[in-house]
View (spheres, rainbow over the protein chains, first blue to last red):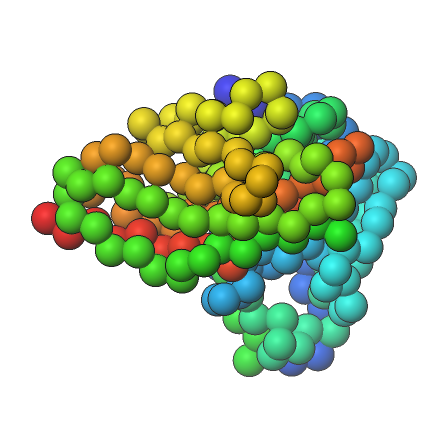
Length: 113
Length: 113
């Protein structure tokens, strides 16, 4: 069955380190998204991509970067991790079109000490 | 700009009684509206979505929502709560011709036996 996976599921790192979170989907979806979830804020969009070589900033993109070299993967990189980036991160993908349904991965819990 | 406000951060109901989760939206155009559910330590799953085809939308697990343009509301209901309905629920808006989602802060549902 097609799916969307994230790795690692849990990560503890130190302030200042570079961290990369992986997202892989097997639906062949054009669109991929990264969100962070924090208490009281719902999910907030970090970066998104509408196709290979396309990347765009979301509402909370500072300190994060993404690259899209193929359809299946959109890795999220924290250039220099900060304690404020402790959060749960969700990746999602969608086909595209009106009222587009996004399919979410299981999440990665990141702790920055 | 599109946004949603979930009017209750927490709702507690007894098993077998109705559930009502309230959501108001703000949009300059006719939006697409969604309800997503997140069970503890899981990713998000689509419950239902409004795409302007019908104002009363039926979703999975007995949930439904009614789009009321005059009240700018998209409230989620279920006639009879089940213990498995205990979860976090998110009201979500997407503008026309755009794939990005804007999430409400979420409503936590507790179901009492």
